[in-house]
Image (tube, rainbow, N blue to C red; front, side, top):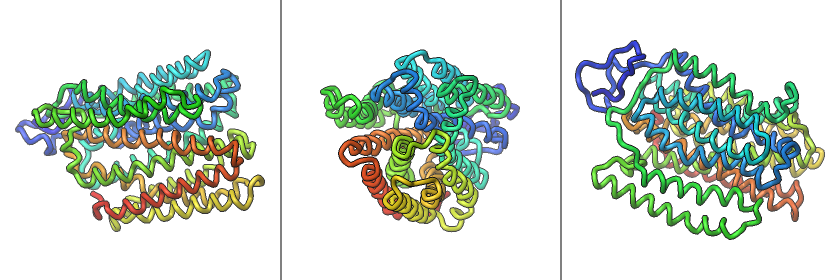
Length: 487
């Protein structure tokens, strides 16, 4: 049996002779350029929606009288549901078919986006955002798993480079697009447009995916690891939810109880997974997956990279709107230099990586550190008369550095994962990424908001930027331990 099987919808027949699950054959389905575009569209939507609400939160608060705690749940509900279910989404795709799960996730994402856009009150919006995060978790792991299973050699390197560029651009474009849509107030929709815009995009994605994405699945499908799934969910919830909601809720007892349960949940999860592995069953996250040095070291670097980036994006949006009284469009457009250089850096990244390997990640971290330092310097010198022009050099360099880090790092993490484990490998990587994004908002965002009353906007922002600079320095140090060659 081949590494992946072909659905009846595919025009490519399955291989006639059996091969090992991690071997590719010439008869395996190949991903067309249109199929890759469709998958990248599916990768962009969840991350755009994680960041698009940052500049819409003040308007949501005014319209729905949400209050700080519910506003943070609008962000956290999506992020936690997304992170909790990603590995399960990858496993289900391996088992029932990645194209099938991609289509189901895309359809559900469109419907839940519609529910968010039509929400009559804050609690309905929170529930719809949780459902939207769950839909994203069905769709997102299938993107990388399909790329892993249907490309090889230079085509895989290019596809992974485009994936990394798409991820970074989506995070920046989300806040820019959010500001434009809120300010445009299309047909009186105000903040609702940031969710309703997903509906036609999801419909387009469904049409394209049905025509262009090949069906693949693992040749060794495994049943769902129910205990592992529940314990992983408990571990992520007991960490992310109290950290995100604690400050706004005033740190009630339940937040401390959940934080105390976090290490217990993690220990139980590790024990269950090791026990399942030794018994010959297939755990949700196979411990043997972490024998891969590129995966293990790459994930260790991905955590501070994404944590610092998401924290910066959240704090930047709040500081510009509440501190400098910028409108949503101006606050979004302040990130335009980051988006432009991210695109250019992503185009150059694959060639640089082919020549210099993982040292591109180190160079990107150093450039990002200079960018964050320039932003901090501009805040220190020019506040409260700070404008987009003073911020542009630092924002641009921070974007350039990140554009060199992310695509290369994604390639390194999955370079040693066999094709029949593409779904679970992708799920683990994206779970780490999404958990770090949520942690960035919870930790750096909470630090910034906690410092505001006593330190004022400028000093709170400066302290937060210095903490983020520390995470960048950590990524530089960790990058020195990556395998030199990026496959």
